[in-house]
Structures are given as structure tokens and as C-alpha cells.
Length: 514
Ligand code: AMP
Ligand code: MG
Figure 1 (spheres, protein in one colour):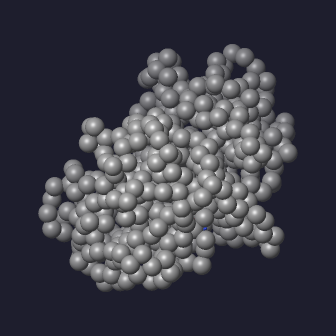
Figure 2 (cartoon, helix red, strand yellow):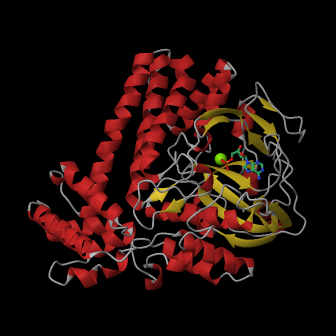
């Protein structure tokens, strides 16, 4: 690997704490602190994403130095590894300084085309931002993030990526369900990549500390590197930046709704300014369609981060970012307008996306009534979100609906529900007759919008159990399936969640423990 090509522009450019003091503490006035990796003694590389490594310009594993790098057991002397400081609103409340508690940056790599990618370890040890925690990650949560971020990438959804996954060789104590029953689990470390890991919380921290010079510097750096299309100057430049973040966020939300993804912890520290899906924790795809579904047990009391609330929460989070950027923009009206336009912007993207799922043209796209009807039916009849659309795609209307759609219900439908479902299909057919798009084009649109494979939590649960026993088969099979989500590679994965997993912790309900 081209480890010598890793650069560290971030720490050259911004004020940082180079003391190397690992003590957990507040670090006012700086954007990062030097943080050493754990130097694991007996790590074991499990998976390496060679394709991604080649793409970003890092290349193949060639020697023990490369392996040690991925495993967080050694880094080239030229690198000062570091953790960044950010703040955030967690579950609606200001949480003050948070920071990379178990993410440590190696730096940035550039490929031949000039594309820059940041590299970081997750689970490679404590940092000044670990806040009484150990900076470690367990195999369970690392497998979930490794596979899910790749699944999102191949679905075509903006996301961080997974470069490698290793056993750290340590045992890590976790109270998985927060019920007073801690147990040892296998420790793991992954390397992940992104164009940038900058979060809303980075700007919030500097603003809250009145570090306006550094806030301006960070925003300028962000615009210059990641939003080169912004060419205005002065306050207009920062307003355009905020608008661009709002647009990317609206796009991300529409994309999550397309595939039925629930993030689970949409705190502002888990919101990427690049509009990437970031920090995979207690996430889930929907099995049965439900706007009120939250996979996160910590979120159950208020269901703040439930599936149907995600766009609203994204807007709330943008509002916090607007407050943080206010000192640079100093124009409430402009910020308010951008925030208000988020709603329309999102719904436009949403309706366009929904129309594609049904194979509709641009006139039918405006048929909000139909989409609401569809959503109500999916919810009331406890229908599998993904299977519904794949079955709809292959339904010609000629064969018997009862048998064609029989395997998509989580509860046996009553006669009344069956009749309601058929009425809905009839309404759908009537809409299709008005569709100006040809039948072939409509089917093609549906095929590329509706995934046939989603990485359901129960599949992850099974893969983790097998991997804990040293068996990689299911993990690898899932990796193949998720790389081709619009095809049906393994028919056994295109089934609804088996009943034995209903209510199973780690499948239907997850904690933040990781
Ligand atoms: P999350 O809910 O995973 O986004 O984490 C919120 C904050 O807690 C972030 O600052 C994390 O870095 C930190 N954190 C979570 N788990 C750990 C851990 N095991 N060790 C250190 N910091 C952690
Ligand atoms: Mg986080």
C-alpha cells in the first residue's frame, strides 16, 4: 500500500493539541488532538476491501507494515494520528463537547485522478474525547457498520465506506441491552473512509466556544475542498454553503425513504456536512412498513428518530447548524428561508422518488393522494416494504393477486384487508393507464429504484453469530448480495423476516452499545 502517500493537511492547517496527553478532557480553542492508536499486539485481519483501496489510491496489501497499519498495531513514523473535536445535540439536547471518542484519523490519500479520501480507524483506542469510555469497538457493531456502509454504497446512497475489518485480539466488556448484564465480546477495529468526516457538530463546537476565527477557517476549508462550486464571497458564500448542506441532506433523506433505512441516532454529531450516511449504530431497514418504527431502544420513549420523522429531524438538525453558522452569515431571514424551503425541497425529492418506485411519469409524480393511500395501506396491512415493490414490479395484473403477493404480509390479512389490497391494486392499474411512460420504461424505472436485496438486521444477526464462531461464509455471501442489490442473486435473502426473529434483541431492537 502507498502508506507514504498519506498526508495530513488537516493538522497542518488547524490549531491542535499536540501534547499527546491521552487524558480525557475539554480541549478548548483546538479542532483536534494528537491521539495514539492502541498498537494491538495480536490482531487478525478478517476482511480487506481491496477494490476500494485501489480506487482511493492506497493499493494492495504488500507487506507486514501494511497489515500492521490496517490492524492498528503500527503506523509509519511520519504520521501523527489524531482525533477531532466536535459537539452536538443528542436527542434534542445540547451535549457540549463530544469528539472522536473511538475514531482516530490516519490522514488523507489522493488517487491518480486527484480525488481525496480521509482514512480513520474505529475502535483503535481511547482519545481525549472518549468521555469515560474505552475507545474500543466490538465485533458485533463493527460487522454491522462494515457491511451496512457497503450496502448503502451499492444501493447508490451517499455514505462513508469500509476499508478493512480486524479482530483486535482483545476482549471488550459490554452491557449490550443496558440491563446490568455486561459480558465480554470480541474486540474489533475497522478502517473506514470518506471524502470528509466533518459533521454538523464540528461547526457547533467552535460557534458555542465563540471561536469565530477558527469557525470561519473551518468553513472556508470545507467550501474550498468539498464545495468548489461555491464561488461567492463574504456572507453570501456561507449562506450558499448552508443551502448546499441543506440540499444534500434533503437528498439523503429521500434516499433513506426510498430503501426504508432508519438511522436510529440522528444526533447532530452524526450528521455529515457532505450529506453522507455516517456513524452506523442501531440502524435498521424496515421489514414491515411503519412510520413509527425506531430500531434504537434508547429512542423508544419518544421515538424521536422513528422512520417517518427522519426528514423533520434532519431539518431540526439543520436549524442547529444554522445557529452555529450565524456569526458568519448574520442574516436571520436568509437562514430562515433556507430552512423553510427544506420542507418543499424534501417533499419534491420524496414524491419524485415515490413515483419512480411505482414506475410513474412526471405528471403522476404530483399525485400525493396516491402515495398517501399506498403508505396507509402498507402500514395497516403490515406489509414488507421491499417485497411489496419487487412483487409489484413482477405483477402483470393477469395472475391471481392473492397468491402473487401472499408472502409479503407480517400478519395474515383478514378478508376485508384482502379486499382493500385488491382495491388498491385496481387504483394502481388505473393510474398506470394514465402513465405517459411506456410499460418497458416504467418497469425499468421500478427495477433501478426498488432494491431486491436489503441487508436486513436478522441477516446481520446471523452473520455476526457465525463470525463469532469463526465462520465467514454468511458474511461473504451477504457481501456478494449487497454488491448487487437490484438483482436477486440469492433467492433465500428475498424473503420477509422469519417469525423467530420478531422482537429479538439485536434484530428488531438494538441498543447503542457498540
Ligand atoms: P455515537 O452515539 O456512537 O455517535 O457516539 C456519541 C459519542 O460517544 C461520540 O463522541 C463517540 O465517539 C463516543 N463514544 C461512543 N462509544 C464510545 C466508546 N466505546 N469509547 C469512546 N467513545 C465512545
Ligand atoms: Mg457518532
